[in-house]
Length: 145
Image 1: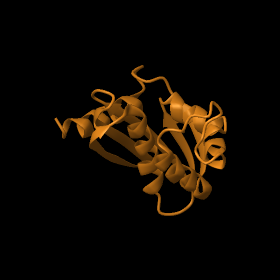
Image 2 (image 1 turned 90 degrees about the horizontal axis):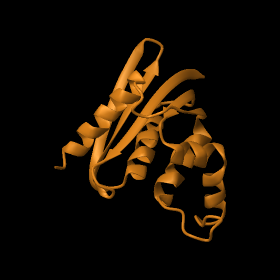
Image 3 (image 1 turned 45 degrees about the vertical axis):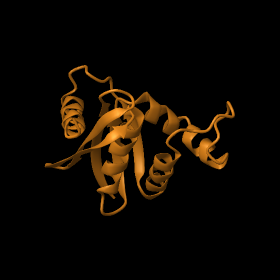
């Protein structure tokens, strides 16, 4: 399996409001940047969209180290919450509906294809790839202003 690094970030101006996402994919010495946005969305949806976009760009099953500053995503995946939400028909343990189930479903399908290790990084702390992903995400959100 190819070993890939993916860095992701999402941004939103207002929550909800115009939002964007940024992704950096790295394989050996090759780097690719992806970005985009939506006119009316939330920060969490953009964080999820960034991860989904990065994993969807892979053309074959890969071993991925994925870096995100989103505790929402990292915790929901690594602590098994998202899998549990799905098995409970997208109802959380507090009996409330899980938000963004459409995106969580896509992400869980991608996690069945790729071997992904999630690593949390502190946002806006000078991490070069996180800062670049943030800039891409902001660029994605600004196309709707």
